[in-house]
Length: 328
Image 1 (cartoon, rainbow, N blue to C red):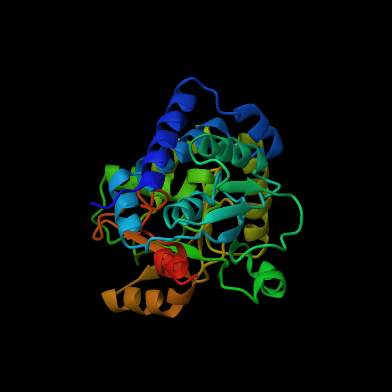
Image 2: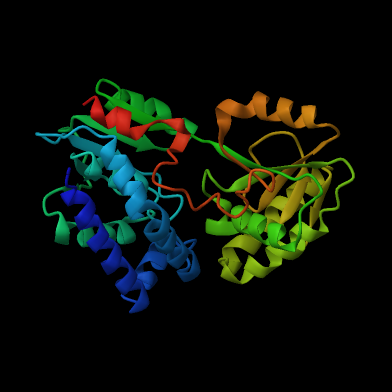
């Protein structure tokens, strides 16, 4: 029977991660000083998602089984975005399970948690993951995540070797008028977790033509205490004022703005809303934007509340990392 020593080591990392959270050994204060959007509830939620989803034994075993035995691991340069805590965790776990090593250049917005996580991993997998603040020159392949504006930079510096470049993507929620209170609470989680800054957060809602938006505001209000109040409300006031000046059809409860618009790029603290009349309208909207979508949630799909809790096998941008890493 095939053994998975890296998987076993990562299960020990999972135990230590859980223990550190329970004993409050996570460097919450320093992480929040570095990035005020990283509040303690958001960090704890991210760690729980990593433990429950990315470090789940069955998912890691399935990923490992799809990888070829590597006799000589390659060095994968990992350049994360830093928009949510430990945004690179899935990529790093996949790299290690595939038998490769990682050279991580942390985001300046997430260096504290990055160092903490990698220290935990290095306890059980020494010399498999290294951190650098310098320009990366010695590597075999790269995985880089950033804005659309960062893509030319990625191409210039990393484009000559095997690579996965990730750009801006958005996620949408489809409502059909059959949702209950629990569904709205799950949707609120998808909208507000990590202050809505992740590509898997719901940035756009497709709702029936006469759909009342009040239940969305009511459900979201339960999560407002977990937000960075000063930063969030300052942004909201500014963005909502701009919306009013532009005479947009928008609604606000003082924390969140729901704005009727068809694009997928609402500003922070805002979710765009498109109204549909027939199911064909939904299909057309999704098809129109499919190249820009990260995920879609709905009651019908049974995944409300799960947008920011992906499995290790829910590959970002639809890029199968097992296939990519196997080819190196």
